[in-house]
Image (cartoon, rainbow, N blue to C red; front, top):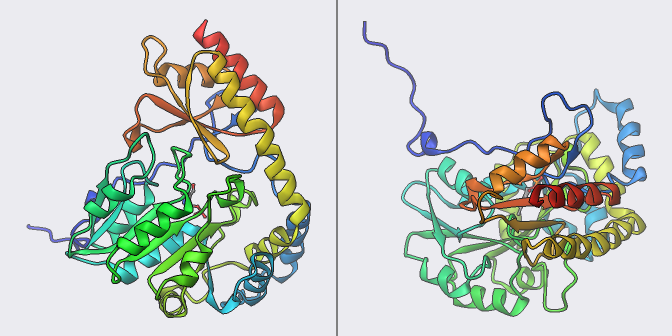
Length: 364
Ligand SMILES: Cc1ncc(COP(=O)(O)O)c(C=O)c1O
């Protein structure tokens, strides 16, 4: 008998499922997890308290419009709350933007080492992902523009980018927007914005405000606010795009505990400042310590470093194995086309010292 099965839409089976950073090593009880760019200090105690308080109301549906959370985000960043849309992680918002603006026959452009989820969501929407070459592991505006065709509907720019840690100055992002066709949606993914300490950087609020309804900025609570486990992100949009996202999102896409904890986290400016200050110490410390070991480190403005291991027998695979033997989990980035590199998240002081000691031992 011939069997027929429902078939997913074209493109779905071309998706390689996203593999997150590992979190366990068989046989090791206490690992040092530096594989997912989570906050080194954990979440704000005020956010944890708010999360616990939310337990009393678990039988209630969440506020589908995230009103209090949007107010808290707007107050912190001086934005119009009606133009903020919250999501279950910025991942969800990236996916919704792909599905709302791109489909079969359309193209979604991003840079060579851009965040992997752009391709996954483009394909799940039936669109074709198109990459533009980078220069020195940094997005190249001219290459991005050259990748645009009449089929391009969406362009993603992670600024700064994961896994490279590099960024484009605001002037370059403005040049990109000015040169893009007006009908191409530019999504500036500023997941790591809070860590950047450069005068020529902008997360993109100014560009969203100046654009004629075709530019969005996405942000996350998973990095500096260290709430990755709750899945919470937000988009700052022109009104027309906020309207589109509010039509396509699930009615209760952000759970109530995430809303409460997120509002507390974003209001806790001293804790955010402490997390930033921690990164400002340990990001350069780790970079210098690894360079002193003879390793090449990509200059990063984020809470992680991309470290190159091009030489045998000290390959990235061997380094990863050695680190794991010492209970340390870094991130392989071969899936990004970077087989000779590891990405290492900035952790606590003891974790950073243990990582450098282990790599010193590895390199002999
Ligand atoms: C550049 C970038 N964008 C978006 C995300 C997604 O973040 P989340 O879905 O946790 O908000 C990540 C997570 O690693 C990221 O690195």
